[in-house]
Image 1 (spheres, rainbow, N blue to C red):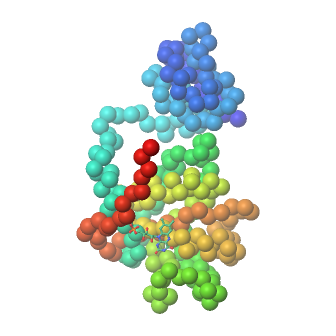
Image 2: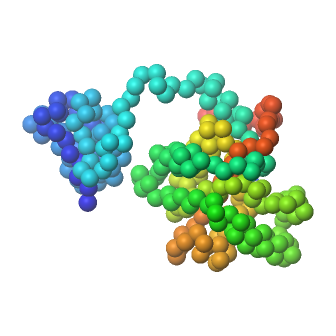
Image 3: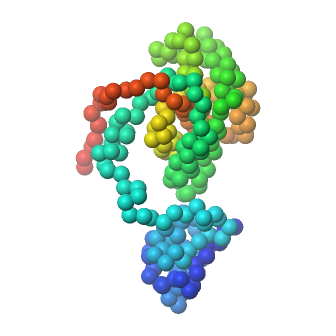
Length: 254
Ligand SMILES: Cc1cc2nc3c(=O)[nH]c(=O)nc-3n(C[C@H](O)[C@H](O)[C@H](O)COP(=O)(O)O)c2cc1C
């Protein structure tokens, strides 16, 4: 069990935390905010909203908490939209190792992504040295599926590593909640791009890996665990000069 601590000496009774608490787990007693610990799922809003820095969670690493600094992370809307528009699925990689710090930063972007009920239940699997073994198993499995009539959707089996595209790193998400994992994966892809890396999602691999016992053993998948996304990461060997066309958005304004 965790404990939300509100320092009475620092609390000024402004009620910002009380009013922002989704689960109504905070109340004002004699002019000071107090945690009830009934329905709290530790979303941390009380920590983030307190102008007095009076709130903390016992036993959590509070040294990770960052104060907002005006101007340090403002992104221009057009810049953000361009990041989204210019992101491409990169399927050609340099034979170059990806630094561990960059991989950790990608995962950090996943870790800080929102989750339903703040469950934070996404697990990340990073494959580097095991990529060749996993590639061999997955390719064999895919060939078996194709023989059984599986739709290859234009993939060419003679294209070398047609499945993993010689990517040096694979980052997988495992989660009960697929939306949580998908959101984390999307932020992770953007984080990869901002660090000069390329990435692409490999749905084919997810389908195969979730059915292949040998791959699941390498990934140390527990009973009932499911891979939701697999993202290849590496230094791009290709450069894209412009954006691509997209269908018009189907919008229902009501
Ligand atoms: C969930 C998902 C699964 C995908 N699976 C594969 C895959 O197995 N192999 C592949 O080459 N590309 C895969 N892609 C990449 C898509 O083909 C690509 O995003 C799409 O063609 C648009 O191109 P762009 O990403 O460059 O904009 C996948 C993308 C998503 C979002």
